[in-house]
Structure formats: C-alpha cells, structure tokens
Amino acid sequence: MATAVFPGSFDPVTLGHMDLIKRASGMFDKLIIGVLINSSKSPLCTDIERIRMLQELTQNMPGIEVMSFDGLLADFVSQTGADAVIRGIRNSADFEYELPLAQANYKLNCKADTLFLAALPEHSYISSSAVKELLRYNGDIRGFVPDTVYRFIAQKFNLTR
Ligand code: PNS
Image (cartoon, rainbow, N blue to C red; front, side, top):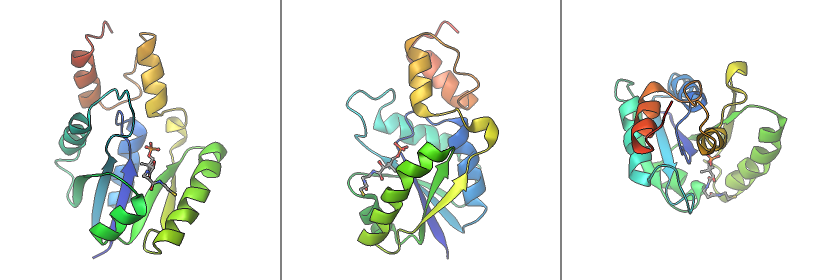
C-alpha cells in the first residue's frame, strides 16, 4: 500500500493546502497529513485546533489520516512507514527553499523522498503567512481559506468581515 506524508504547520489551513491534499490523495492509497506541533511561539490556531480543522475538512475524503508530529520529518516518515513526502511549490522561491530540505530529508531517511506538486496558478499568492498578515490589518481572508476555516477564525477572533 503506497502511503505519502503531507507535512506542514497548517496555521491556518489554506485553499492551496486543500488542493494539494485532494490531488495527492488521488495518487496514493493513503495520505497522512502530518501537522507539526509547536511550530510557532505565537500561533494563530492551537495544535488541537489545526488538527481538528483538518479532520473536519477531510472527513469525507477516503484514505486520509491526520496525525501530529514533533521533531524531524524524516523520523516521522520512518515511524509511519510512508513511502514519500509531498510538498507544494508555488514559485521559484519555494523551490529554492524546499530543495535542500528535500535533499537533507533523503539523506536522513531515503524513504523520505520528496515529490513536489505544482500549486495551481490561482493559489500562487496564497499562504498561511499571508492569511496571518491580512488578519493583522483586518483584511478579508475569505478567498484564501476554506469556508470552515473562515467560520472558525471569524468566531475565534470576532472578525468584523
Ligand atoms: O507548512 P510549513 O510551515 O512550510 O511546513 C514546514 C515543515 C513542517 C514541513 C518543516 O518545517 C519540517 O519538516 N519541520 C520538521 C523539522 C525538520 O525535519 N526539519 C528539516 C531538517 S533538514
């Protein structure tokens, strides 16, 4: 059974993440979404909130499991017995950043071989960091995150729009 890990901070989950999850899950028998815990000192969403959000968003998608991990991705891949790691690439800056990480992960564990998926052009400007920046200045995040995530954030932070 071919299994892949899609790791990330998911703080918060974006439309770009959801597209990659859908596409990657169609390529593998099982897709493990690996949520890095304690990824930021001042997170928008807690570890539990991020995990619950992903569970809700993927509840009707067969073959997807949401797990948390702390520490090295290469070790997490080894613990899960996965065959590959999926990362999305939006632009050349992403590639520059991701390539050495992929090479290091492969060096640590050759089962942690990374497959890059090209983000859809309409998602190329979407990131969790952009969502956090918009929220800081009361910007509208609705075109950036799934509805479920918008509703959760709107309630948590009393958004005025
Ligand atoms: O969504 P993000 O923040 O871009 O995800 C980054 C993530 C979680 C994939 C990356 O930070 C990671 O793998 N962290 C775990 C620690 C690790 O293995 N670092 C690489 C050492 S070579």
